Length: 141
Image (cartoon, rainbow, N blue to C red; front, top):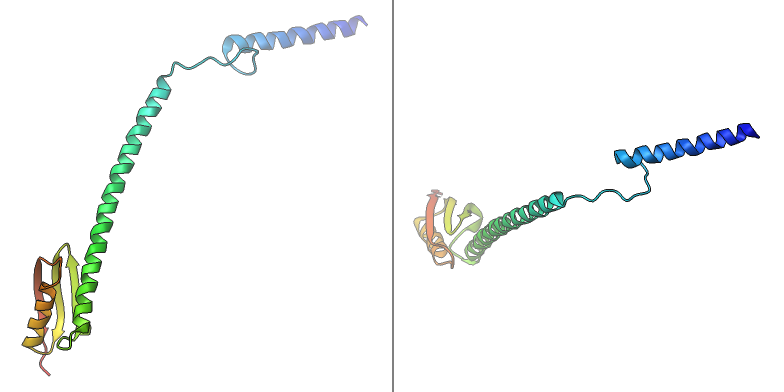
């Protein structure tokens, strides 16, 4: 019986010693709540997240602007190709249309000077075109 009491007392003392050590060192399980932070890390995190949000918004605006530019260039190219395809005097399949901003470059081959002039005029009359670069070559039959 005495032996059991001593073992029980040693176990209680050991558990109390572990709790005391953890309490003073701040490690492991303790009966007290963990110490509160000073809030400096939270403020840094808020500032960093605000900076990241601003950067993301700027990149989003840039991407939207680039996408709008690409879409408008593609729409302009399609509009010009459609006008040429519907025209009886221009062979649209032999003419390449490249649009950069509002400048359109025509490349390829045409059958005559009249066809070349007509293709350049159709392109120049299209809304949104500010300049036409003529690189068309006249192919002799």
